[in-house]
Image (cartoon, rainbow, N blue to C red; front, side):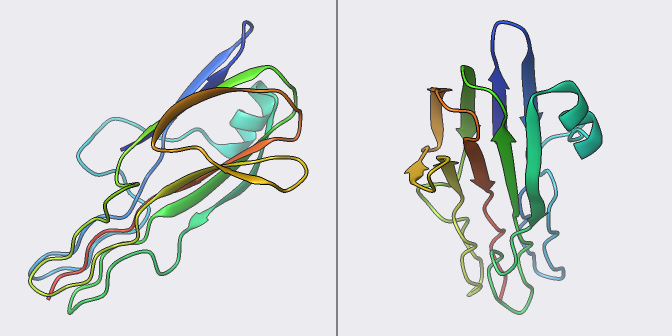
Length: 153
C-alpha cells in the first residue's frame, strides 16, 4: 500500500496510490490497481488541481515494473505532484521499497518501489518508504514509483 499525505495549516490531503498485482498459476497480474484494500479511489486530476496548490505532472503506468514469467506481474504506477507553495508538509507511508515483490514458481520479482523528492534545481532526494518533511520551496515535486507485481512460472 502507498499512502501520500500533504497539507499545511489551511488544508490537508490524503491519497492511496495503486501498484502492480502479482501473477498466479493461471493469470497475469493487473497493472495500476489497489491490492488488499477496498473502497478507495484516487482523486481526479482536475479536482486535485482545483482544490489544492498542486499540479499533477505525471500519472502513468510504470512500464516494465512487473516481474516476467509464464504469467507476467502487473506494472506499478508513477505519480508526480508539484507543489505551488512553500511550507507544505508531505508524508509517505509505503511498502516494498527495500525488498522486491517476489515472483513465484520461477517467475521474476517485480521492481521495488521508490519515493523521490525532486527539488526545483533538479536534485533528487530519496524520500524513503516512511517519512515526512516540510517543503521549503515552491516548485518542489514528489515522485512516487510504486512496485510491480511478481511474475509466475
